[in-house]
Amino acid sequence: MVRALALVAVTLLLLGIGPAAAQGMYRWVDENGDAHIASRIEDVPEQYRGRATSITQPGPKPHESCSGFPTDSKGTTRVPFSLERQHMVIVGCINDKGPFRFMFDTGWAGNSAVSPEVLERLGVNLKNAPVVAIAGVGGVTSARVTMIRSLQIGNARLGPMEILAYGLFREWDGILGADFTTRFIIEIDNKRGILTLTPR
Image (cartoon, rainbow, N blue to C red; front, top):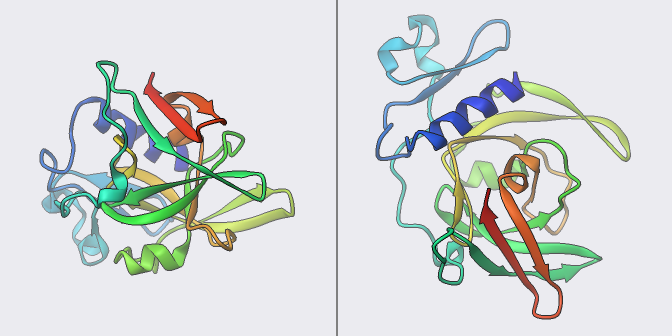
């Protein structure tokens, strides 16, 4: 289910259907716990309309922390990073709001994850979000699955996309997973502390 919804989000991105072009997208979860997406509220079964969530409402102008260095003709974006406890940390935006601090980890194989507290501050309702099991170094734990309108690092922007509401990051607001990192060719300049992202 997680993979299926991620493919829907990627397909919409490739078709160029962003917030301005798809203002009527809605997500709901049926009695079996399966998540669905519809382009119009009328397409959501009547019994689920009360809990359907709009995932593409127009947002405010992106926070200045979303900006990176000027992009080139390939759409490359460059952003500064810091090293904290041997982890790369970069700043970005969720739903055009920020700044939020993300651990950048190319080894995180699944969906990107954001602290539930951050999502709640952004107005994302997790009450009816389905729960999935995720495996980590400390064993198997659980997280909720929800949709966000956008995730942006510098000028690199993806969305709508499915993420995990997962809160074991301590000093960070989230972690960027393979759903974000595999969409770019990544170059790391440790000397200058610059991360370069080029769309694949």
